[in-house]
Image (cartoon, rainbow, N blue to C red; front, side):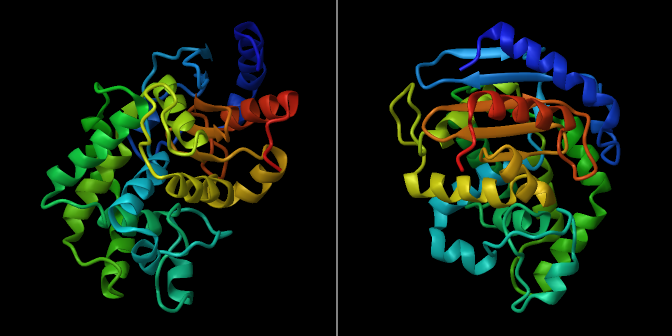
Length: 307
């Protein structure tokens, strides 16, 4: 794999594309990000980390949290129960679309990576209260990242909660069709906190490493999630992880990955290493434009595609 100086050169090349992107200013707190920021960490099974850019910057997970929550809920409930509430099929529609819900019978979300599906999955986190459920998720995230200090951004969570009108609409639709049965405001409180969990790209890469190693943390030896759960999650990362650009991403880059509108990307190269990226300038699909260029350079140079 590449050296630190090579990685720094790739970051320099990818940064040139930031001017073609735009930060996610429809969530006011995310609109404050500098579109020219770009950082990356590559976490190897032996604990070595290669990084470049300002890796002390913290990024909120946003939609990256969907893949972690899915893993937790699969552990809690098992495959059969989870996929009664949400499907397994990719969609060509944007991540916040409501259209397919009206077309599918029964009216369950097509997959856990679109917002409707993620809300259905978050609804399934075990616990007696929003606080208990969020605490369980946060503890799971901390274990995956090997960092007990990880928390969430109250500013981003509040900003999202106050502007999440479309997500509330999705919740009410899901409630009408029996996919969820809890108070919508409580679910939105949990979901916006989930999306606002924040960490560095080094933490993100460590989580990617656990997925890459089939749910086992190679540094502690602990099997944090069953290998089958890790397999399901990586499959969703390939088919649905990059919103409605997932097919093109699979062809051009071919690494299981999940993006978020904060500009974060979590990637897992099976059996080899985890990658964490933060580049807030987004393309029109909601993916980090500089992060995508960076992954493309890495994948082509080092033949990282799983296909």
